[in-house]
Length: 470
Image 1 (cartoon, rainbow, N blue to C red):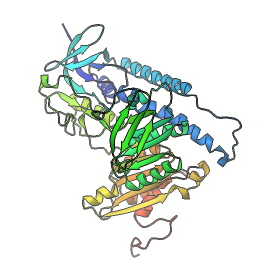
Image 2 (tube, rainbow, N blue to C red):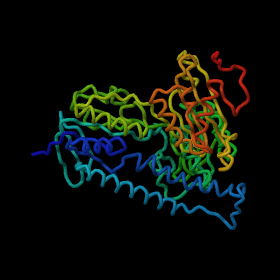
Image 3 (spheres, one colour):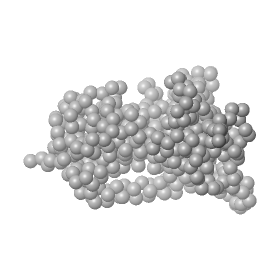
Image 4 (tube, helix red, strand yellow):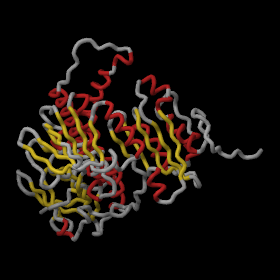
């Protein structure tokens, strides 16, 4: 007889394993199925390995500029890519072990193999050691996404996605990055300090097409100053490869030769051949659509994370997972929280909410406050003065519509903005928060003050906030 569980989770990424832990915490019997490594894409092919490699690259970047801070580095400073990769691999193994221990602690049953839905309430696990089937009252799909590839392009070792690039055994001398989104920009920032000649080609008019245009322009200037070649509004008309090098023909007539080509043109849902038809589930452009409770169109089936198409971010998946479990176990809850974005270039980029351009396109009356980090004592002391904070305010309601930051450690600072938005605080209330000094987070207060025409550390605005009569 097959085993039965209250909840089954398909996939152990940041959505899946958190859902399993939450289910166990709430007293449910839970099974979780993983076809490869615990932690899914984020831990093994995304968030964590990329940040480990970026940390080494950023250290090299700072060493190259150490003299600016009065530190003279004598002798040759070199990159040992083998050691960098070994450090990364150790981090991944440590975190996998940690997830495994957490799942054991919540008495979750882990199945290693490929899961497919095999009719209502049934899950088939296919593995080299043999097949197993179990049943579950509720099933949560946390199958994630995979890198997109460009049809017709070469598939030899010179043309790869982030899945392969994070685990390269050797660094290329010349790297062509196709796509200037988050993945492309992080890889460009990572590779350049390690001695790689980097070129980015982005089809749309700016790098980071989905983020604030002022931030995108600032990052382009930073990259250009570092010698990273950026072509925006440019298509790749053709790509050839011979197993050693690849040659791209651009829409501007240029040809670029590279030792490696990184295809960073986005990700697509990993929903093919998982048995959706056996339970009556359909997809929309590959995504399994859900409501705010993570419920699909089929009773007792939920979908979280990248595969539902709502927000392809690891922390969103974790939040989805907890909401799905609560609803599955009879505790109605909607997911409505604002989700921050983070880009781990250096300087870092972070945002939450809408951009000024998006707000204006929706017809909202907007007031924008900005504050440059170059004015901050903390930024000067850390020798990280690039960037700024921007607060987008609804001019009539004082609502925080969005916060956008570029600078040192802003991926940590954005949590404050997200928290204030989640609590539906106003821009005026943000301006009244007392932030520690000297910190980068003070930029939130300064930009909020500017958005209500009350900034003290900027030249006076022409429009002043009205002062109530006494």
